[in-house]
Image: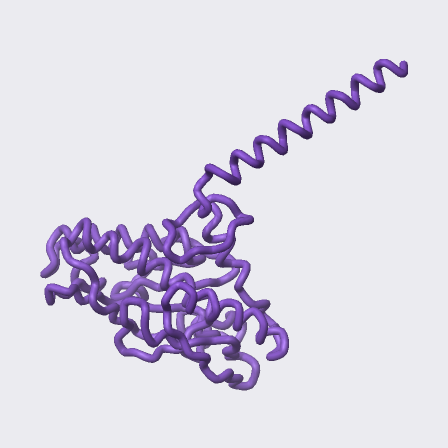
Length: 252
């Protein structure tokens, strides 16, 4: 009996050593973007753990101003360490239904948004920078042969219900929290313009490559954003890509 007990503990000890060795190898050689315990790096490709790392910065829906301060500061610090210039945007509360806290403006270090100065939740800004660096620009170079110089948008904040509904029972849109970005078009460094409305189907001024580019950046966004809504989702999104950071969503 005593011998069996000793053998059991020896097996447990050996198993623990194997687990520790496997963890050490994983920690040393696996890509950091695939390991949830490694810090988020906005200059690394999107990995298996990237979305989880970004989501750690998301604020609770009912966060008080005091609960927002530290996470917002950590989020802005990460952006600045990655070379992104951001400034804190004032909080706003339109009677509780539409509430924006911990938001920022990107003023440099990322592909410019037009119109400029849009206010967005800081974790949405993290997602935008990752999407810009790891999805949008690589796709533009690969498919269109030119980097993106400007991202045209329909804004982030709008105090309204989902899909602009007037039904009092419908929930607020993510735009009511500045937690969504609507991308309408991009202008390339060589002057060409690719718009969702004209080019999604691949039959517009940008040709088949324009449609392929838009679909690639939409699909790539699904690895970062909770909802990616395209012209294929419904008619309300015929002229833009809706990118948001809701707690859960769909890739459409």
